[in-house]
Length: 267
Image (tube, rainbow, N blue to C red):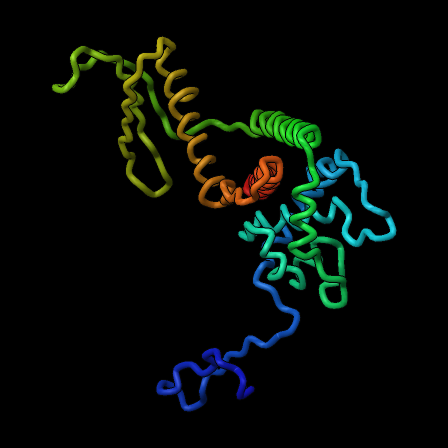
């Protein structure tokens, strides 16, 4: 054990005759192994390729060390892995997993781009490029949803849980008039458990049928809010600290692209 090692390496010395020693000195290790799934999602969607193909690279070819595709991949894979800032390039630049994600040897491959390169890249994209990239991202998501809808129809099975929709008029003590209340009377059944009542009530002024209001309006609204929370708290889409508007817009777009890849992995 190195004398310069300042981290705790000895565990439970009072419990065992032989001490338990833990070292974290493997030179080519990473804690981001799960990020490899991002590569598969990206290859399936071809998202980084589609986005980079829109940009025009005006740099001198002989001086280019990192292509636009690689810069987008480094940024998007980093965002999806919890590295929200370009400054995090110093942390993942020599990470073996991130090298592999950019098709480099995890041991002897070149380091990824530095923060300064990423910052120049973020500030190089103008309004027209951002607009077209946004369109391409939207097209990719819409096509993905069309495919998923078809898959769900093909794999649909009979539901064991039963529910019935209805409505009534109700006036609480603090209300000045009766209001429409949508009722979902549901009985859930799970293997090995007793049936359980699971009623739901939604107050609304919408005029559609109860089932439409509950499933298409109420549930969809809640689901959208969950996705917004994931973008805000999980992806830090509001990390827009650059003084230039378009650079911040580019960061938001890349964060959205990272989220699309995570959704592909999830579903």
